[in-house]
Amino acid sequence: MQTLMNKRVLLGVTGGIAAYKSAELIRRLQDQGAQVRVVMTRASTEFITPLTLQALSQHPVHTELLDAETESAMGHIELARWADLVLVAPATTNFIAQIAGGHGSDLLTTLCLAAECPLAIAPAMNQAMWGNASTQQNCNLLTQRGIRLFGPAEGLQACGEEGSGRLLDVDAIVTQTRELFDTGILAGKHVVITAGPTREAIDPVRFISNHSSGKQGYALATAALEAGAKVTLITGPTSIAPPERANTIGVTSASEMFDAVQRSLEEADIFIGVAAVADYRPVNVSEQKIKKSAAPSNSSVTLELVENPDIIQSVANQDHRPFTIGFAAETDNVIEHAKNKLVSKNLDMIVANDVSETEFGFNSDQNHTTVLWPNRSEELPAMSKAAISSRIIELVAETIGENNG
Ligand code: PMT
Image 1 (cartoon, rainbow, N blue to C red):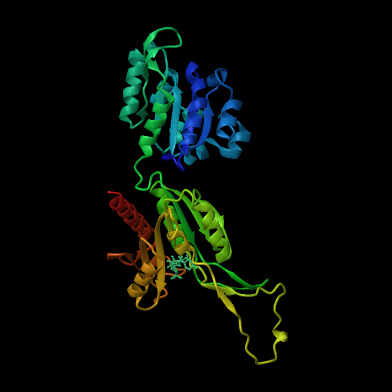
Image 2: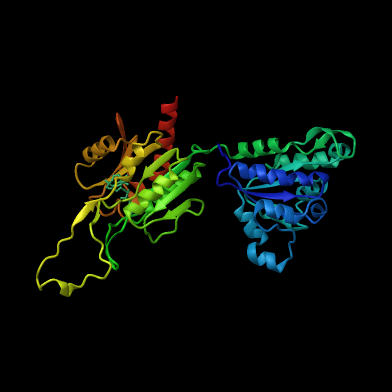
């Protein structure tokens, strides 16, 4: 289970002999799904090269505060804003003193002052330096300010002495980092969501579609990300931006959405079908624009349609199926129609939306929904699609918990 999925860790490396362990730390954090960017103090580059950490993190390593080129690409404020966690490992006594004193003397210390996300520090130094009253006082100050201290560990030191001050084992640093984030109700889960409309081509310039804007599906993707899940968002054409951290796959037609869903299912724990998938598509797609003049004046035109594959039903009928949630937009007998879809499509849950009023459902910011399970239901008050999505994600997590318990 990758519990750091989607998390952005800014790794600060300061100048001590344990700096070489930051290479392994980058790998282990990435194994847990984290994105890692690296900031090094000048002294740390004497112990391990920026090139090594650049190759491992797959991003440029930042070392200088007053470097016009780097600042224009991703400056210290952007780096601070980018991070979900600033982790300084190893942290020297000098770095700890600088932070305790509120100094911004180089890129790393400045960035720590600018960061609004949590800051964690893994000290590494000689045992006498660690035991020194100033170091202890500074560390107490940092802890009081809510800065986490990871370690240090005890044991034989590079200088040959024995005692407290060693950098905590890389695995223990990763575990403690995971514990900082391990609070999301969907932490470690992979959620696949379909959203938006599909377009079924008639000819090169015309298509059959519907009014889905993608707002409900994108709001659910955001809520799932906030709950700690990895999210794959398979979306028909929309004019809104998908959540930045979702793995977004754009498709046009129902057949393309079907194929993209099949490819994404292997590691999916949860599937949510929010897309308004066209039930039918034209049997023949004209390669040329169909001319009005082709038919006699005042005559009618008939489009022959064929049924599209039912995406959610194919997901729900797989041997190793994910927990599967559908949506049903209805204008009449809302609950009855939704219940029928829950059963006929073999779903675990369905969200019924009453779209008889234009302020709810398609292309609106609000929705009015009832969540149905095979044996119960819960009506949610009319509210924003973001608020509804948070509640749906809570209900999904609760139901999965009940099924597993
Ligand atoms: O995008 P918005 O503007 O925010 O609007 C949101 C919404 C109204 C589109 C959304 O809340 C919603 O209700 N989506 C489902 C629309 C619908 O009526 O679907 P349906 O009744 O045709 O299908 C039921 C379920 O089967 C849905 O989960 C749908 O994604 C799925 N389906 C349908 C047909 C098909 N060929 N494949 C499918 O997977």
